[in-house]
Image (cartoon, rainbow, N blue to C red; front, side, top):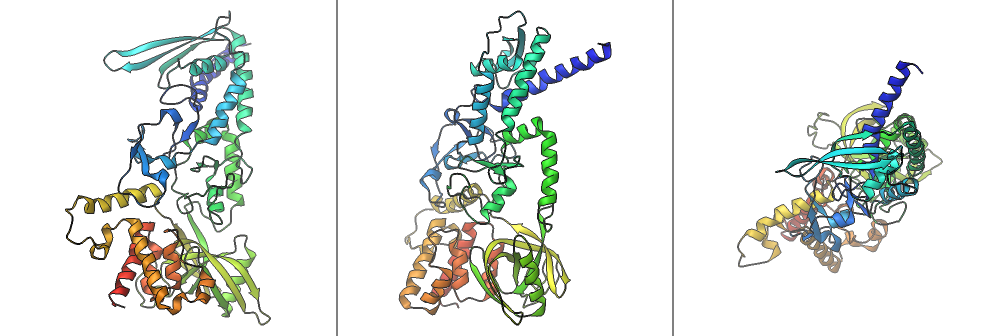
Amino acid sequence: MGLGSILVISLLNLWFTTNVLSFLRHIIQCARCSKILRSPLRLPCGNSICRSCLPPIYQRTGITYPANEERKHGFLCYWGKADACSGEHCVGDCGADVLLSRLADVFEEVLADDCGDGSSESASTLTWKISRDPLQGLTTGVGSIGADLLKGVYRLVKEGRFDYDASEVHYSVGDSAADSSTQRSYTKLKNAIRNELDCQVCYSLILDPLTTPCGHTFCRDCVTMVMDHSDLCPVCRRKLNLSLTSRREPSNLRISNILETLFPEQLAVRKDGTSDDVDDTAAADGEQTLPLFVNSLSFPTMPTFLHIFEPRYRIMMRRVMETRGKKFGMVMYNRGSRPQPGLGRSEFMQYGTVLMVDRYELLPDGRSLVIATGVSRFKVSSSEVVDGYHVGRVQRVEDLPITEEERLESLETSVTMEAPPAASADPADTPIEVLPTQQLFQLALDFIDEQRRKGVAWLHPRVLMAYGDAPTDPALFPWWLASVYPLWEDDKYSLLSTTSVRDRLKVVARWVKKSRSREW
């Protein structure tokens, strides 16, 4: 073997020991206790720690929505100063990380057998530095890790002797036998890890891993697709609050690092294949192309009933039915010719709702009857006319994460909590902006009860047969009320641009107050 070959092998060994070994131990090592992750919890910011390493938990105040017992407790995150971390996390958002827990088991299965004590002749030595006391500076740690570097490092981590934040890590390899045994363990471990990294929705390598609050990890796009049809986890069927925020949720940092470091080629192929497979209306910048039906208002989760008779919309609907998603956009007329940002005085308003066709009945004369359900909201950035109907470039309108919604409620209601008690505690006299979210919802529910007792036409059984009874979920209620309550569409339109349940309930509460004061 020539000197050049020896040099190349030496450089590869150096790269492996200084990069791969450090990376592999960090996969299953807790950043707090420096031991193997035990019952790992995924935090909302994307980091993971042992369940027993959670910071002190305290009672959260000023939050009424969501009204879950598990959301009443929170803690300050260790990574609170990082850009991706809000600082405070709700205990209810910290689910067990099922995939990471399984990977910890894989490490145990592959590396725990015959770890050795590092006493063999081909033993390798590991040294590192760590700062435990700022006043004393760096201290040196030393460990003998045997012929198999991976098994030796795993043993040190398992015993809690190798600090997570160790720096200046150096490996002193005993002989070539150490290289071969380490490589065998690495190959076995890598293959075992790969077997755990398939998404349980698309059954391909996980792409942009998103871990749900219940602890299961999927491709982000798979979660978005599933949540368009259901709010239940595909694996455990637990209710999720991700339908409108999956694009904003942070990726699982450890799983992302595994994919990018151990399987870069497979990940690149997966990304290329995904770009070929996605609907041709999708765009890399988050926009998509959508045919637009200019008619009236539709709302998410609510049905829309259409009679298609205009030739241009007959063409549009026929093309929609030929697509995989069977989706189109509904926008209302811009009756006042108001300027729309980026669109000018367009024929239609800028915000609309994506509808998915549930039932399509083609009549003998070419007309059709359509029942479609609102899936999500969008904002039109530009449009063109194709065969008489509009086709828009649209961006999805998403709600703020639940954690941000809670923070805003706590901030707004704190004004009332800090103010001196008034002579009258009547909610009707309290400004809508400072009412708790649950109180806003109750205000609307009380209004429905009042109107039902009056026997108003818009709560007739025939109407409720089409749209259902008043939802008990505050997130769904505004869409339902906007669908059945006889208001001018211009008054309802403002709902489409809101980005939180609280903001929508404020809009609804204003409708109620105006109705009670007979301003309408």
